[in-house]
Image (cartoon, rainbow, N blue to C red; front, side, top):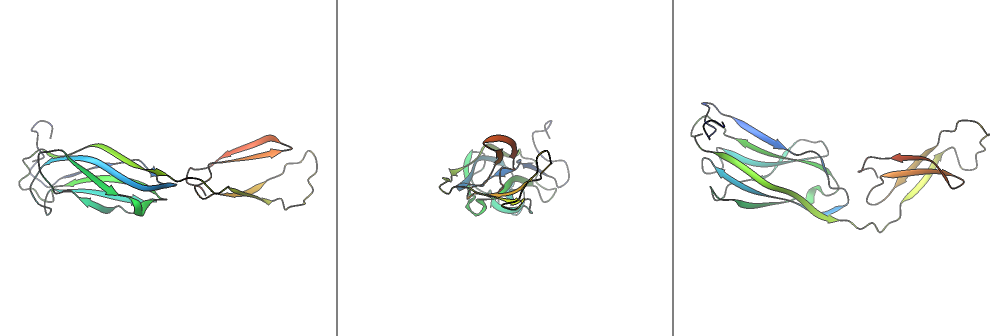
Length: 178
């Protein structure tokens, strides 16, 4: 509550801060870092301060529970290595659990950062036209539907179709497509 500077509203309450999707495709050693400051009930049973992770649109699971020195900015770090190659969302959850002893400021997070090392692309992409079949004859002035498959070890983001060296179609793919 902004007017009182605390979260005592006479009942249990909670709040979340959730990131947009973060693509960890092609990232090695991904890590979440942030600073945490809180003034709450001590311990881990009440006034929970949790960091949750969702991978590829799945359920959020707990990655960290904050319970260190109060009223100072503490640097925090979460290894996201288990999520390398996934698209994740990160959620910070504060939950009082009950309506008692809620007359403190609460939990603040700042300087939130996801970092890692971009994977080197050492494998050339592969592309194959799946339709029309190899060796097919196509008549002039007819519409031809071309189907292709493309893959690469760190993802494919763009496919270009050329006829006699002239660009005829460019198709942008989702960043995580392989």
